[in-house]
Length: 541
Image 1 (cartoon, one colour):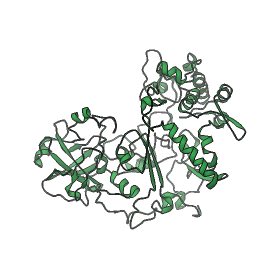
Image 2 (tube, rainbow, N blue to C red):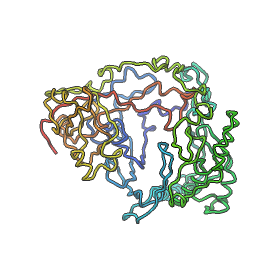
Image 3 (tube, one colour):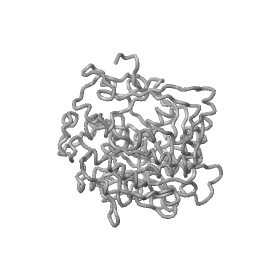
Image 4 (tube, helix red, strand yellow):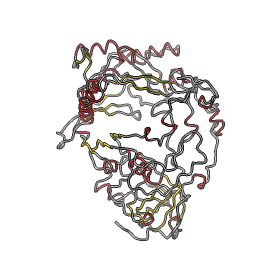
């Protein structure tokens, strides 16, 4: 409040606020995920890029320090755990060869189906590759060795935590008032983020990595508003092993991936029927309804990694999820709320069509009514882009891919044969006729953010005025050079996008409008991106 301590967001371009180290793991962050790929290349990596935009926010920025020249190359080191040479690996400083699905032990599940699958090592790993778990374990071991000299003892670390869903913070901000402007008192956990001082023991990071600490034994576990005690199961793991001993204490072992998987299976309500039962009993106290019968029949179920290897199993009923499963019954969301009358996790406990938060009212989104889209010039995707030759402006979309899953599985001969050897640019025949483009012609697609050179797929399946490049191409094959960018190598689908944050998705501390990782928070909206496309005058590889 006094200003002695600042948030990094108040001056994100200050050198002290730069991210320095980036681990990329289980993802293709630089192309598949990075909305605004060319800006990542510029500001994070400090390398070649194809954006031609200029910073235009100087006159509108109020609460953030403005830098006349945005820094380029904030990162010092990028480390990629990968089993193939994708775009992220192409730009990484260090690539650590990772084991694939059949070369390691792991768990695979999702909230899109109700089964849990093991990934078992069926064949030896290739050359120097290691499993994800083994790679991070090795890094933590070397880090701890160095920390004993350079970071001895305990290091205090101040952590800011958001106002979180399923906590009292859900009712902390019925009005939008800013403590920073003096509109309300600065109260951690209510009118501002909560804060906690954590003591980091860097020299023991490796020991902590391979050990399951006592916090859950003392505090229990839970998510999505649930809670349950695991004290007896924690003690059972200590009694039956395997364990790790250091600094005079004993902990359940997480030395290898299979041990870690078994700890997860032991303590999760969807794989331990007794814990599901306890969690339902906890919910009974909250909602005043009988619920424990949903776990009664499966109360004795326990799943281990070896059990899953013999047969993939279905998840058990759990109050963490809104659906119900059973013999012959398919998982469907919100059946838990509908059939058992459990309140929805909203401000009123009901489904909402009217959203009475001031932010939604100001945005005109308090009711599900039609709103016309802003005009392309208001998005400023084309403020600095030039039209050279016959050119047409189109609305640019990036749906999920046809010949791959995200950016994986597509770079082989069968799939590239289906996709013309590249990720084509889909457009309507009338739009193609307007710029003298025929199916399979090379086109140059560009805006202020970047450029793509690829083949045109002319199809009546695409609405007029719309164009598509499927998510996600790679910069490793099928990418010619761009005449509009001085014959520099062109990019991929996210070269034409940038991150746009919708302000009403940033409201918090109000019922369902309260942060939860990967569930509620601002998304990168890029569906209203606009581009210019022309026929490529000359193909240059």
